[in-house]
Amino acid sequence: MGKGKRRRNARGHFCWCCGRHRPNERFGGRGHRDHVCRDCQRLPAEELSFRQVVRNMERRVDGDGRIRRKARPRLDPFLKHSMRRVREHAEKLLRQDAEVRAELREAYRREEEALERVLQEEERLREEGSGEEAPIQANCWADLPF
Image (tube, rainbow, N blue to C red; front, side):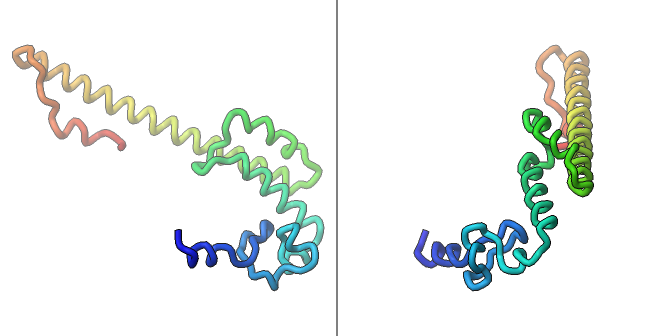
């Protein structure tokens, strides 16, 4: 990695609150240390705490939208949080997790059914043939979801 690439990535700071890389001039006082830009420092304390809690909740979610089993109990305090917005966001994350898991289960079921059809077709071709391994026809694989 060349110097130019490193220098380009090292400029300024990242504001965790708004999620942007900002120049050093946009951070003042405690902003450098806290990684909060001046614009976000002006937000009400309630909004800043909400954004921090949301950030903590979303750390439990994988890239594909699932919440791992070991991380689910860590969402329970957020479901009982004093702020209504936090509770609603936690419930939304759990709903999304359930939807993603249902989609994955359905895709797995379809894949299993397609594989079963391919194996049945292969067995049928073996029975019709001379007992040797019959080649699988290309149209058998067309039903597979991958």
